[in-house]
Length: 128
Image (cartoon, rainbow, N blue to C red; front, side):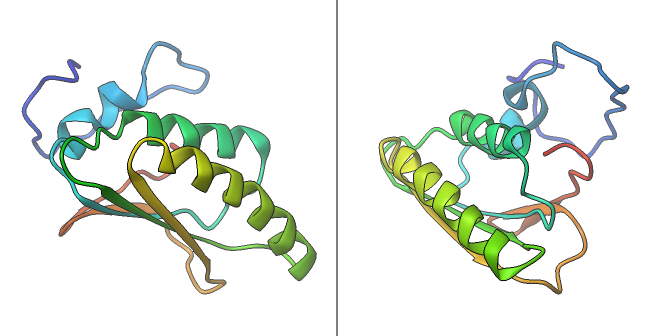
């Protein structure tokens, strides 16, 4: 599973608690050259999920142009939305240093997890 492989449709089976599989290895070929990415994760709430989001951002390589990363998530309550907004604002500041325009929205109607890269959709259920 080389990060330099050609992006091809495939299924990668990961076992619970499996280690040694980075976001670069999983998504690198598909992210190469992407300028607009939409990530939908309705369950982006816990610290490890935020850490995984930041690890995903680290894979993005803005060369000459900025990359736009839009995240859509949901919150269980208004209080949770305010707390998550504060955390995502910090992620946004970190992304700016990599020439990544990071925006986020809350949408309670989103139930499926996925990522759209320019016009392609990658189902990443259970990864982030």
